[in-house]
Image 1 (cartoon, rainbow, N blue to C red):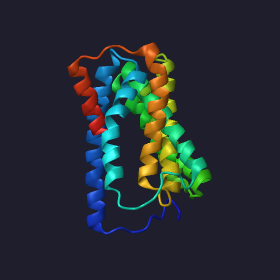
Image 2: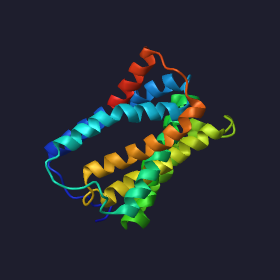
Image 3: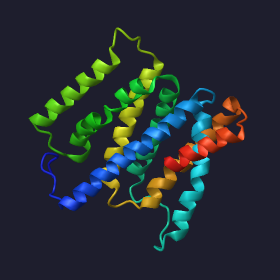
Length: 226
């Protein structure tokens, strides 16, 4: 199916989709503000670790409620593993960028994610991107440059981290589109959680700082929003 000719959807479904999309952005904005607050004190490794730790009960509940008898073995192991790696990179890079950069600059870079998705959809999904889409991509890139003002604002490692997060997030989204119809939801959730938990646990002895109850409560809130 061409990216320029999506299947028609009932108007009610479209309105509901738009409403859920707006709600998702509101949730993500609150989620990211919490990360910004925590990032002033704690390492991104520690923040990701505790968010993943608090997320396990919810995923466990989903597994218990699943009535389909099946294993957690991936049906598409290579692409599932690639998506898992992309999600780990997205979280770590984005959390670092949010903790260092102003939110406006971080969001300006992360807003390139849909543009990168458009580009990646060509080789990975085989979709056709016509002229008007290319024009939209170019306009979007110009908008990002206007906000970031390269040259006027020095580019730092945190800007590169945000760009890595945008690319990795786009890659995970495109891979989700590719394997989402054949891979179980539980597999798509559990493997990124396990990978994040394992990697961040290895880093914890080097970055851990004791967290008071109010910070742990904030981490729990961020995990629930995520």
